[in-house]
Amino acid sequence: MLAERIAACFPSLYSVLTARPEELYAVEGMPACVADYLVCVGRCRRGKTFMSADAPKRIADRKTFGAFALNRLKDMDSECAIIVLVNRSGKVLSCGTFSSSSIQFVKMRPGKVLELMSGINFSGAYLAHNHVNVPAAPSAQDDEFTAAMTEMTRKCSARLIDHVIVNNGGECFSYADSGRLAEIAALVNDRRAVDGD
Image 1 (tube, rainbow, N blue to C red):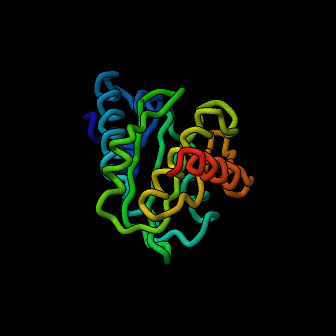
Image 2 (cartoon, one colour):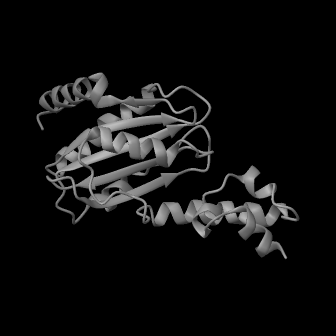
């Protein structure tokens, strides 16, 4: 029976729903359409219930978040992004996962990001996303999104604490640690001054 073979290959339902397609295809007698369906269900589940039992309840610092982001995103086969909102003591208040099911980009609609942030009295936000099969170096689009997130969090009387990029090779880039986050924040402030905001 297929269910028994799946149970023999994976220790939990969570591991089935986070398995890579090739892991599911390798199960004896697994129809491709069933494997594809399980991958789809897993992606939808991660998008809606990001805070599973293994997610931290508190993020003490950037290093803690970087380790969490690397662990959560390094094995993904498509680009995904995570936003975690915290209070002053680092307690996780809300979070969201975004994905496009593409290895080249992730869709993060501003309305969905603002929906995540609305009605929550948070003081800081962490952002992470992954690169698939390429270095964890930031692109121009990554810089633009970091600037947009800096502005969005500022409008909520909060701040973007870090934007972390990881890849499936285990590399990790931190905007804050590199000094790039401070440079982008300064550019955002200069733009606001010019615009009279």
